[in-house]
Length: 212
Image (cartoon, rainbow, N blue to C red; front, side, top):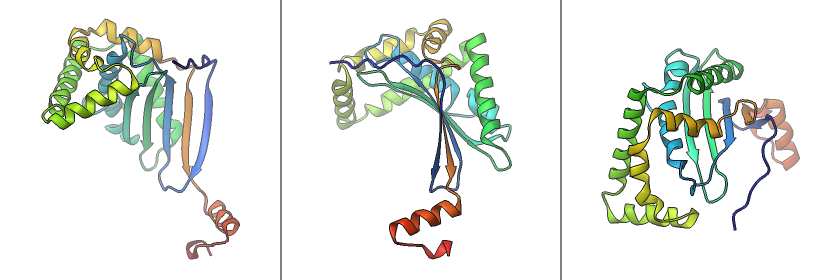
């Protein structure tokens, strides 16, 4: 049984007050299932966006000092998965600035595509990670078991060939199937104000000394 969720019709925005000192931005899109033939291409796209100093988000957000950290990943299962971008503003910068910078990166890559050099680096990284993960029989067994639970164990066998055969055009086409800057969920995690923490503590019957 595969559950098909309703199509996202627009943008949803959420703000969460949490017990953290660091604000964070999360942007998420409904993705494809792990059984989709193009699903491995999203791993390439996420690797091009983040993961090292040559990636798009790192160069646009971290190197410029707007963000302290930025990342992207594809999380797929038997049902529709999610493609996620997360970023943390650097000191002196806001979530609005970070979100604008992320959107600018995505607009550019969706309009102009990825380069052959970026794709070559992403392929080498993903295939190397795969080899490393198979160095032990336990690692291979865990990988086969995990993909069998969420889809088909043969996914593990098909994956390398799909990665190796990818072109800038096929990666861009897969990204465009998922990334729509008008249809996504934007979540913001903000530090809970001291007054809110005090109220929560009183409601629970325990008021920490930090807030007296």
